[in-house]
Length: 415
View (spheres, rainbow, N blue to C red):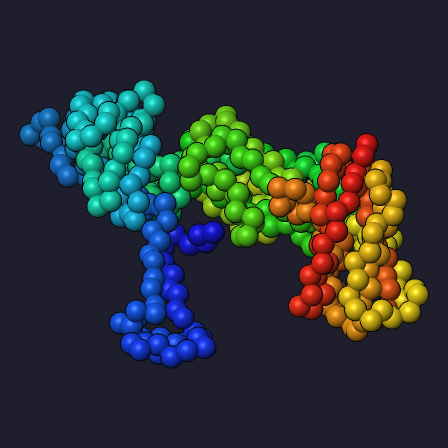
């Protein structure tokens, strides 16, 4: 899983061999030898930047001191893509300022809509740029200082260069472009049993007044929850949830639109489990919240949480009885009873010595459906009770790993 927007190189090397190698030395980190190789990865990410300049002021009279003297203000807006990937769906928001009239708009690529102030650039290759020239007519003394904001479909490496401004007057409207993001989080079962599958739904809503991009939400699963799957809506090649980082890449979010993420998890803990989420990035500022500040319940609406209460003693999916029946001479994974079962069965195993034990259950497609045990155990005979209420009828494989020893056993669930 790629966890960075920077290009990375993955290197492999032979570190040990029974016989000598005629032209290479294992584990010496010499790249010129043929017992080493590497591959480079360039993630799908872009670095969009926008720059706005007032390039000319054309007077309509020889006496600009007159109160109603008019002038044409010529702005040039340039957007570039620093890569490392092609940028698609590139847009620049640059509405006509109040008190001015659009005289002309000329774009080297795409088109400008004066009603919405949106320049639809389209696709920009790595290192490519596009230019928009706007001519605005206003009173010579009018305040024409305004801003342009760029966005695209790919994750942006640097959001700080997505806004640019220029003009005549004071930069008083630097927060004129904003997006009020609200976050909500729910769970479909607030009182699950140990081992149950539950579904969290996360929704982020843009109340505007402008479209934003680069939206990211941090939703790192707490202790007691095991990731199973995630589905993001809308979907795109660069959107989705990275369970290793706990980050949902939302992408662009138009005004009055909602993006949703459903995360399916397995309950592996007991007691109260609190799952929190927070908006950590957006191209535009949020008027009533600060992204990534960790504030919950103090008037900010870009954070949310969902709580579940898991009852049941012992392990999340197991109840262990230790030391019954003496110490076996070898590692054992016994026949479960009852077998077939519904929905509960007992799995016996024995250890001739103390060992770190992992007891897991897999379906016939090789997917792990339960983690029954993962901890050091004493020598002796033990039993684990597996509750499989949320699984369908079928054959499953119980896998015991104790130290270097691995044993498997088939079990049958019939509902």
